[in-house]
Length: 407
Image (cartoon, rainbow, N blue to C red; front, side, top):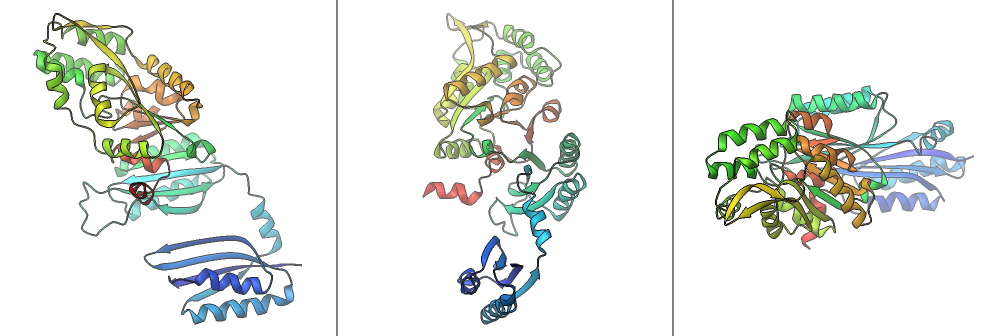
């Protein structure tokens, strides 16, 4: 009958520790059932679950491992594991796994305490915690900082809807972002990201900027705000706003384009997505002229937006072709997925307004970015406190991963 021992080694990290322990185990023909290692601020914690084939050799194994660790000026603890307890642990294989991602400018102990309390109270067991963001200097500017912790949890939540709503409420109270996803094969095989443009990739609504040039800024801004909050039908409100631009000289379009600002993290995110082999698209209820302008800057693969109708050098107050509203956005996302040979689970959609919800809800990962309350409450995930590059964390990429892309 085999003896099962949990060996826990801890102390100052140095080369050769794992080699020393496993060599001793090899000398006794022990098998390794599980192994894990973490280093926090140069302090190592190594755990090995080993099965000793001959119970009579267990004492010798413990003595030999202990002696090898003492020579390294480290400490070791041994814990015998009953066979039934081990079998119960093996029986947990196949249970659903979940990823909870905590994003903030600065992560505080109270954030971790709150997240772990919520998950534990609803039946999830956290078995792995990793820091995805880089090391944080003590004097970092908290308004520009970026921090992310990823929790891997196992089990079936007692109430999945309550878990999501509790995490959403917690995020709002603490001014942090918390994403909750099932850890499936699709999380690691997503290949297409579809972006809204206005107030998502850029920090403005282009139609409001055009209205300012046309001298109808206040009227158009009021309609835009109501539409983005879902208080007005998008197509109806769009036609109302567009009609107010009638007669505006087309020469103002490049002037407006040049003063548009990308949202935080947009350029970095698109660069990394391209390096990682993702396809990208802009699917916007805004205007094609500006979407093409962004495409030239960011290298986006596909662009779909409304085409302003221009006659004799002036805007007519209409668009050419079908208006891209929320349902059309979802349809275009489906078409892009089909074109790329992807399942919807492999597509990411990012937007901020009510007209983005149809595509956010059918995508494998729908992210509301600095969105209106209605959209945050309805979307799968949201990022409100970090920039667009925080999306890389939701995909499981660490700062180290993405920095390595530069060779």
